[in-house]
Length: 129
View (tube, rainbow, N blue to C red):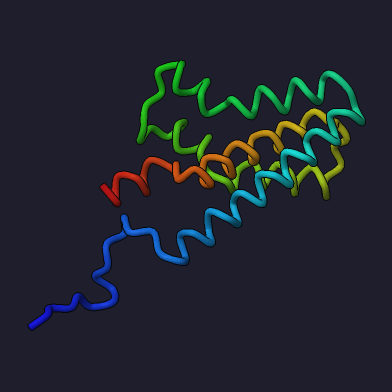
């Protein structure tokens, strides 16, 4: 006699096809964003490159500054909607300053890379563990 778990009682730690597809999608997005950031950096020069690199390491900088999960600042730098809002706002807004755009690209690239490697925001990790 076998006992089966209901479909909704499956372990959140088990990466199914959906988890694999999400990682592939985040990886493709990370590659696209990194290529776009390199393109913009080549086009506009050193200030855009510096902005992209600084914001790429922003999550590490907050960790080195002593900000630990689940703090508000730590959560903010690990949410994809914030750099996405920067990119959309720059695209449709009146501001024309390329380092702002590449900063958003670098930041979103880092978040996409973290999601590809299975490192999500702290709140989702604590729920699964």
